[in-house]
Image (cartoon, rainbow, N blue to C red; front, side, top):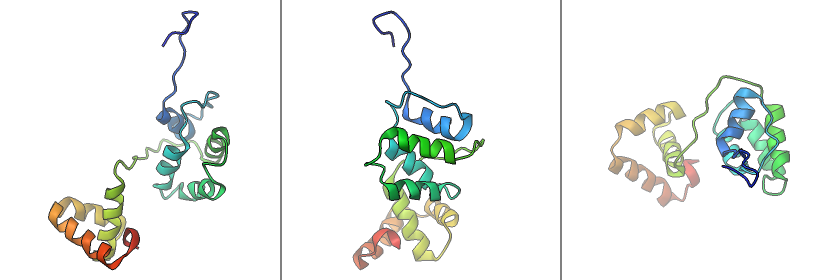
Length: 138
């Protein structure tokens, strides 16, 4: 993207911040593209970093300036080569929890079960828990 002086203006995408926090440890001063919700959701899904996401939630990611949330993650998470998969579908997470409870298995096993079960079977399990009024299978 070019600005009025024909200089290239950098456009930082939300996952560039994740890469900065987790892999490169190169601080990004322009936080215009930083989305605290995405960052928090990503790190809360990883057992190594869930405690930091809980701190951010406890403080209130919507009440603090973006830079404060970015700094919290940037300075507390060590540089690593780890790659964290972003959960694309909230219902997939919910269904995994229901399957964990239904079969009494760990999350990894429940994910394997989800690959083996038909959509109809998963829907039946979800309906069992939703009829009981159980939130997220817990």
